[in-house]
Image (tube, rainbow, N blue to C red; front, top):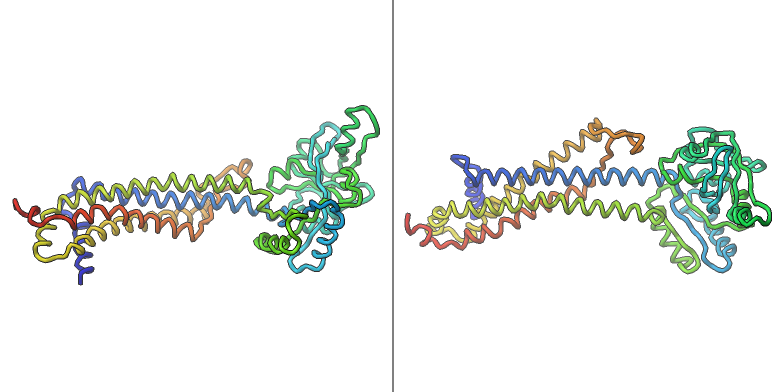
Length: 410
């Protein structure tokens, strides 16, 4: 019976107010502050998750999911072992040998320093998302003339399109040209396609060509730099990486997942997310201090009632529970309201795109949002937990009131 009695008194003190006074205003501000803080946290974290998911979708839809490179003294032999393993592997959906390096690319009017990427004509199209990202031309390699696939941004910088020819100079050829000695090692590539990956690095800096042509320009001979793998499910990349490290060791090979290759971007995004969490949590913290203040003043206001109840035999633990429940209910009211408000805005944005963006700047026409269930639960739990913590001091103060002092002058 003690808890129902404490609950009844808490509800009476919370809702049965004959007139709006200063304590009531602070209580309302507490509920409003928690509501705004919880809703803001839900919305902002959903936005961060939305942008992170958008970036991730661009990366995994175009890039390979795992890269393997050799660091041994005999890279050809060590990579041959990897090739044999991948041929019999149940993990790899497709894989391709690759070489990559900086080159100078010259068109009829302009020239740029780019990254030349050589991929296997057949398997490379499955490892990279070039086929799906093409906006001009067809995915077709011609070994005799040499084929090139470039990003839309690079095509604009070089003022070229499908059918135009590019001259690619190797680093060694550039050095010879500057020194005025030797011949210039170069190849000519015909642009067969222009792609748009929505990744500024690939769209603006990369030229894809056949593996043999890239080997010749970059001086790899018959060797490859490594292998790149695509899985049906990109989330198993880390798991496969651990399996390969245990089997082949980490001394002779470098295993890099799609996440490892872009860890800097994700680390910055995680840091921004953490800072946003901490800053917006201050709103809830201030609201919790308001709960502490309103309950403390409520204890002073109800001092006579507390003295009468104690003198009539009510236990101090019940008095403590009354004010703890009052603070808890205040926190729950604000938390639930904030949770519903955040969910409402999230629903409207996902279904009706009420917040639009410039697609030329952000590559998407509306603000992306992705609500994580764990984030949502943690926000609600943290808000209610802070409300309970704020209730401890005034509740203990109420329980420690001497009934004789409380009713002496009444």
